[in-house]
Image: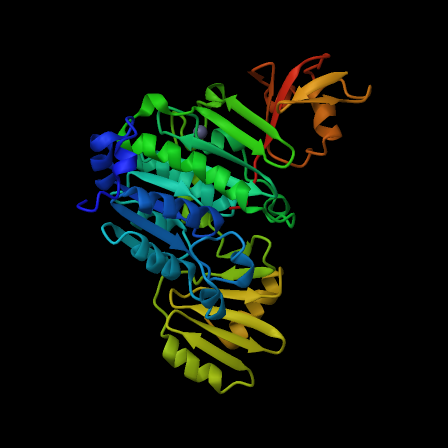
Length: 341
Length: 67
Ligand SMILES: [Zn+2]
């Protein structure tokens, strides 16, 4: 505080000194550290939100650098997990706040662990299944969350406040087929920044307690086509909604409804999660894999195995990414062959 | 007729008379949508019935998963 780093923000009267203190006392959970996640976590870190938890299951690749603003060429070269690199960079940006990166896939166990003590959840994921999970957790634990999504030059966002707004399930209905989410239409960085500009501003309003200032609309834009829509969706709240209705069952918090495999958006990659969380002994596994007829590269967080024209990345938290396939059966058989269990 | 769609004027062919027709015309049929006509949300079950007239303001939003 002695450096006066927040002076321009406290001069902005809706935040002020009081709001700044509230930001400092706040804990925000950011799920995903891709394009949206790196953008919004940098905004929130610079703004002085006291505690940021950032969870991501992936590692940095070259194709990320065009828009994922916290990462460098070195991160891509060394396949550094995004949560690790984001934490490192944000600590350089603001050393006065607490930043925790977690290399993990957010499923039931993880969200129930990470939501403790959190004031707000920011959706920076790339899939609807995780969003429905966040939506149920938000309702069950009474924590607001802010949806954001973008592809190409368009994006949309909505702020879910339990007991005040419809929830995401009320708006979306069922999860769209995977083909609709894993698009190959690309993305331009301004679409990302537009979404996070809205998400971050709504986040500030929530954290400083200015609930009357919230937008209360489903906001859509297409920057290339010059389209904009802002829709009042209060009437879409459904009494029988399984997440926010009169007798909620939180279906996405039921472990049986969670898949153990997932096809990663636009990546030609299948993720396999072991049935239980555990910490994999990477050094023992590395030794074992080095005896095979393939190429093994490792950093403290993961092992990269190239073998038989296939590539697999094995994380310390037990997960494995099988690259070069969208076929879950193929991925599972490779997993069983080289890693087992 | 001419509709204002997400803020922009757009001429649509004669074949478009209902919200469903418009969704098909815009090739949004496979997407999860929220549709508003003249500031009123049109439930999915009403898309086929809801007729459009010249000058209507239509907002069509489709959910995207990327991030
Ligand atoms: Zn609901």
